[in-house]
Length: 164
Image (cartoon, rainbow, N blue to C red; front, side, top):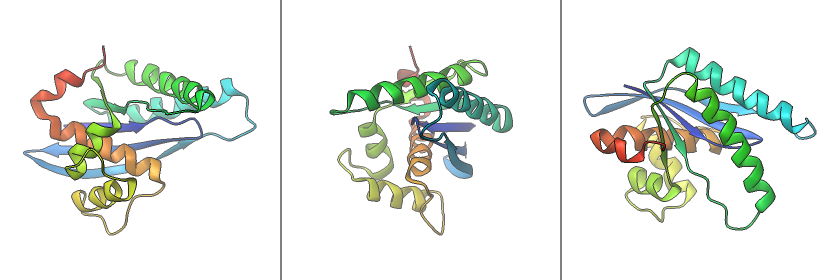
């Protein structure tokens, strides 16, 4: 099974592709779809849409897993990231209906064993679980890989995380 994990973002949308088979996981590729400040919003959203569309066409994932949004205070940022997430969901939906979402706490729990783990702990576990020499950069890509790992570990329980 191939899972595309996505960490929604407006400037950087992290992505990671993980293959799982028989309880083993292998990192296929990772990176970020990047947009630039000063570019009109509609063009940034289109770039994110096209970037995710390209990813699903290149890697042909069985499932696409998104990190749910969590914002404590900045409403403007939340709206922009929500719009970016929407563009990514539309692109993924054109390819498959197998879309899932996980909260940041669920991802931390799945990857580190603690829902209160910090970003560095998650990154270290991504490095270890994927057998990498270094932590994937940028952080958004490591977060997307963690989301894909979470989905792979969900197994048959994944249906409870299907987007509704």
